[in-house]
Image (cartoon, rainbow, N blue to C red; front, side):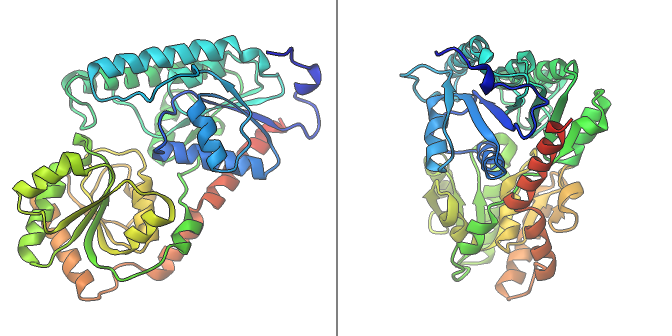
Length: 411
């Protein structure tokens, strides 16, 4: 690598100097998760605000940056032949950890490219993104927190629904977040971006100062939603997700079965890479004629499919701040959900809440909501929906992020 030019890293006091470096070592595969989309929109916002942007990350990150027409000046931290890694077995989890550690070491070895006038942004709260940011000489270290990791006790006794039997991934997540936040606490100039108010409160209890914790919710692709065609609402229920115990898959399928018994022409659309895992179970429950699996879709097509539904079901037993609920609301769908603690502080009374985790009550609420939707009853307040869409667009949340960075850059 060429020697850095001092002019590339002017002191923090240089007027008008705005450079931010993103560390994104956890991005794998071509399908984007909610946190990945959050990252790309954050990059889009700072680029539009005139910031110089650079990255530490893998070649998959370069692919996505090019897809989004974003500047792709990347210091690669992966190997040229890195294969897509999965997280579905103990062996694959260990291989994934090894790759994380290799990217971490590669990032550390190249931190000299970060100047004292730069801002560095860890794209996750995992150690392989946060610790290099902490060790850098950047004048401000920023990390983002999407969800509170399970405690060690919750991992050991599996008292949180997102902890699977092997516990390896959950243990890694728990220890990783603890290590990252502990290290970040000792930085003089830092910010933690959180997507919901409960995380804000949790960080204040850990000793972070109010000015160091910035509440910036996940945004929604309102432009794409508005562009998506509004056709007939031919599906009674729409759901988007993955097969995991925290998602309440059993409750979802049993609710669909109950609805199919009530409405002979009932139709549901389950979006995602789900057919292999769920088609057989749906057949056993007599739902083959009622349930469609379109596979993974994104962008305008995803919102077109959402708009073709009447009701969105959210039987999850644990979430951070699910973008999909925001997307469903923005597409005009009433949402029936178990009342998880993080929902009401953000969504208020916009959701149809059911006491956790009363499956029969969830079925009844879904049945009543579908019946009302079929009858043409207005279940979403149009004026409130317009306000929600305005306040939670990526444009608006991007402005909040840029404002935070601009203020910190002037200090």
